Amino acid sequence: MDSIKIDFGTLEQPEGGDLVVFTDDALALGPSVTERFGAVGDILRRAAPGERFKGKAASALVIPAPAGLDRVDRLVVIGLGPASEREKQDWRAIGGVLAGKVGGRQATVVGDLPGLDHPADAMAEIALGARLRAYKFDTYKTKKKDDSEPDTATRITFAVAEPSACRRADRRRAGLADGVNLARDLVNEPPNVLFPAEFARRTQALSKLGVEVEILDEEDLRRIGMRALLAVGQGSGHGSRVAIMRWNGGDADAAPLAFIGKGVCFDSGGISIKPSGGMEDMKGDMAGAAAVVGLMHALASRKAKANVVGVIGITENMPDGNAQRPGDIIRTLSGQTVEMVNSDAEGRLVLADALWYVQERFKPAFMIDLATLTGAIIVALAQEHAGLFSNNDELADRLAAAGRSTGEKVWRMPLAPEYDKLIDSRFADMKNTGGRHGGSITAAQFLQRYVKDTPWAHLDIAGTGMNAPQTETNKSWASGWGVRLLDQLVRDHYES
Ligand code: BES
Ligand code: MN
Ligand code: ZN
Image 1 (cartoon, rainbow, N blue to C red):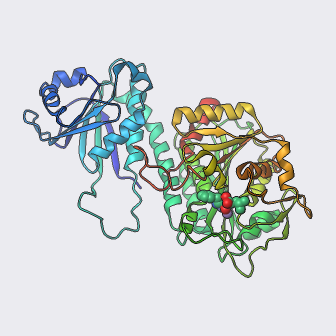
Image 2 (image 1 turned 180 degrees about the vertical axis):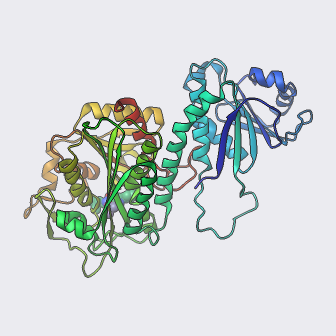
Image 3 (image 1 turned 60 degrees about the horizontal axis):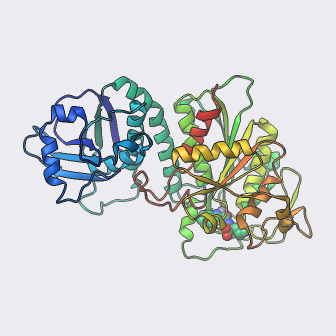
């Protein structure tokens, strides 16, 4: 996973390595830097023009071995931009830049952030950004690409006025960062390693945190009647699974919050096979399920005061003599029938049974599903927003707000009865695709047929969960998208 160690302390003599300081766009340094390292201001003003460093937000200047700074190898100056905009600073990005510069080394950060209402939270967000940036997936690299890749752990000490307040603020986010990085690991793993039974097995590690984990195997699924989920996996040599993860941190009688994930370990399209170009990306078709696992890790790590259930449908979509055929009619767990006209629209079949199962068994306060469901959502929103569909305005608004504060942004898309006719079938209650128009909407409209009056939201993360845009806090193909969003949602509204 990651190899970064973070601690908080008071400002002592740096023990070698990097000295990290913050500056604004006037190249003004914080008071403890000026007091303790008087030479830094001078060095910075001399070096900045030549390097065109202007202290812009999330920019950085590295000055090697400055004279006059005992036992410091390099001075790393991080820009924060105008002091007037400090309260709405993107601290996670700052932490990402910081970790990017000191990667593989030891660093002392002078945590001077004067004038903030919540300096400990800002510092902990910087640490979170650093942890997210430090993530690497190199399990299968037997050689390093070049010598510049650090192979030692990054060690960062934040020297701050109130170390214990920072440590407390950081503790919650450390489990959150681990949850994001766990989700990333699961999505990055190749499909020959992370097949359904192995994915299910890995969820069992959550029991160390106090999460109850229950695995349903093929026999269980057949007995329960999750025939739509099983139909997707029937062409695969690997058996399907459902993993149920329960965290009971709330009042004994409180209805649980439910999170449901699409876990298609590999989506070849099945008999409606996909073109071969880029098909390797379809190992990431379980990013929704991975986010649910990462979220359970984060919530349990910080002992969230809520009852939460995570349910993931895990299967593999392959072409085979036993695979489902276009034209097959499936009787879903709900009793509704589906004419399966395109085996590549498999995610909604998995979710149809999972949603119905969760609703009937757990009577949840709400259900939120995450799924890499449609290529059409990438056409609509690119990779900047996930598609949000919901039958409940309050839940939708809360998700949108959590999206703005975490940077995992969602954009609401419509659900409406007029779209229903697109998935009407001549032979069954519905068919599993609605044609080219509004592909993400008809997929969501399909899912809604498996939701009764439970408040429900569907997040289409095909664009955000995998093959992700590179940012200061994500250099990984798998972003771990959704873990931070949903952790924030629970924290903001659903803890007793
Ligand atoms: N897993 C795919 C969606 C997807 C596409 C995820 C690109 C990530 C990146 C999904 O199962 C799928 O194949 N959807 C089809 C639906 C169509 C057959 C109605 C699609 O989007 O083309
Ligand atoms: Mn598919
Ligand atoms: Zn898929």
